[in-house]
Amino acid sequence: MYNFFGMNILVTGGAGFIGSRLADRLVEKKYNVTVVDNLFSGSRGNLKYIDKIQFLEGDIRDESIVNRCLKGQDAVIHLAAIISIPYSMIYPDETFDVNSVGTLKLLKEALKNNISRFIFISTCAVYGEARYLPIDEEHPLDPLSPYASSKLFGEYFCVRYSRLYKFPTLIYRVFNVYGPGQGYSDYSGVITKFINRVMNGAPPIIYGDGYQTRDFIYLDDIVDAVIMGIEYKQRRQQIFNIGSGRATSIIDLAKMILDLMDMKSLKPIHEEKRKGDIVHSHANIARVRIELGFEPKISLKEGLKRTIEEFRALKK
Ligand SMILES: NC(=O)c1ccc[n+]([C@@H]2O[C@H](COP(=O)([O-])OP(=O)(O)OC[C@H]3O[C@@H](n4cnc5c(N)ncnc54)[C@H](O)[C@@H]3O)[C@@H](O)[C@H]2O)c1
Image (cartoon, rainbow, N blue to C red):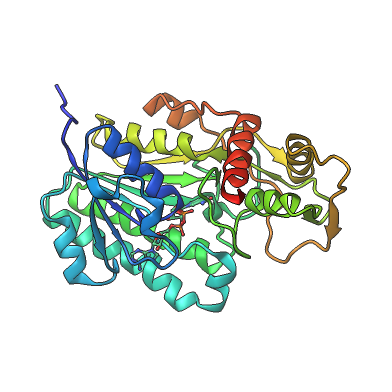
């Protein structure tokens, strides 16, 4: 019998958008949670249960920090990363250092500490432009940005460690995550940008014709997938796509947001297609469904409603 109750879990990047929601849910599920985060883009304020979490402010590239935070852990969920593609274009070396070398440093220490579960949160960006749809885990890898390449190197280290040392890692190739708590900046995802503009009475800006598609997955669904991974009984290296399994065009997304916000009078503006933007992205999630029993629960409409409500509450 497996007993997950009271397990010690390290969440790297646990002050960020996904990591903070995950860390809070783990606390609710009675896990002992440690967060390490250098607050590059995250904030302590994102964590509801900060008083119940051991919080270490530090950099995953710093071996003394990694050493400290891995002591006594049973599982590591590795989310700490520089996630902005435009930033990675300007600072490819720093991005590689954090996302690839940082992952290697964690793996090295995790192995020494007999960690039983290591989940690396990677990205669908490793696939590049879709050669067929929906994209399964065997799809060719062709990262188009320093960000995507750096995550692919992180994956590579996980796979090597699994093969060399029989240290089974799980790699999650996550599609477009959205939900409450996603920070707003020039680098934010399209949903946050659209909601923010519409809230200020401005129409959404669509790059290109808007028929490009994305696979949007709600924050709580990816948190569920991680928890299922922690509780997964198989001890073998696996790569899983984590998405909703549905394609949504950007033009339909804009219409849904305008509708839900009662702003149908605003008409989206079209600007020139951005260089490096992929056209279609849509996950085949058959593998994770079979292996982990993962099923996304929140529809796009429901997830957008919740996200809009949170934006409205914050504006008050
Ligand atoms: N948001 C998405 O749509 C999405 C999609 C696919 C994959 N991912 C992956 O999910 C993970 C979390 O993404 P997010 O959206 O929550 O981003 P985020 O920027 O909110 O979270 C990343 C966290 O990592 C921390 N961090 C950055 N560099 C660090 C370092 N050197 N040492 C310690 N902490 C550091 C940041 O301060 C931040 O809290 C990332 O690994 C990202 O690649 C996200």
